[in-house]
Length: 384
Image 1 (tube, one colour):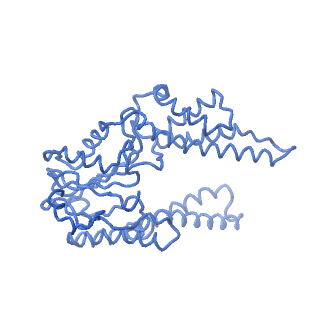
Image 2 (tube, rainbow, N blue to C red):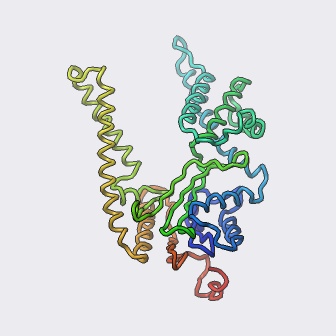
């Protein structure tokens, strides 16, 4: 998303409920800021008894928002194109390998290499299935509705490969399995609902990531609820979108760095085992490597939890103003990192900050405008 896009919205004028959007800022080719405002203007009363009841009502509104089949198919096209482009690369590499091997060596069958890649991708998707999603629809139903779209992309993306009926059927099955999995595309949308329902004494956060709509049903790939309570969590800091710098601040390490350290550690363990073949027989190496990996992950988890508890313990006692400054600082930290590093400068510009409370409702602490607010005094009277 552009750093000038609106990502935080007041979702109701009658209740302290806010919405943050990240990644894809469009719904059925319509800007989400337009859709969100339309939803807000149609809320005439405080209708949410709990914060977690916002998403079902909002998702129903999104599904009924005017769109064509072509708008729905656009998401599938991007998913299929990304997958088939990878298979095309597999095919080209296999053909090059076959040419370079020459005579006298075992022949490389590019088609079989593609079939193996399809089977591996399908197995990956099957291991990460979304519970209950599209259970009422068979693969035949899926192909009946979406097959023409898929075939059109197959004919272009795999034009250098002879796609017979068997291979086409295998591709159809892979795509259907992917759609029913949690494997996300680059155009997923993240929603973060926060605030209070009328029956909520303490704040709640409900995060939803969805990646397309199929047969009139959202493909929800991730969902998280944090309910602040006197007897449970009394404070929480949850990063979204570009999370690395916030994770480092809260947990002491981000996921990417943790994965790199894990690879280094496992490489060192492997070298030690290889250097002492008598001490560490080959039959025991796998168990030793798994034990080392388990101890490493437990150690990182313990350090991360201790770091998080320290941060949350401080946040628990901050004032509303200090909380707003803290949130601003975390986003600014990420912005600075992107600005002074080779990483893409995808976080920057003015930073929006809002605070939600039961008494004051939705309060802007910082807000960017495309115009000078001082030159438009009547704006505040027309729009909250």
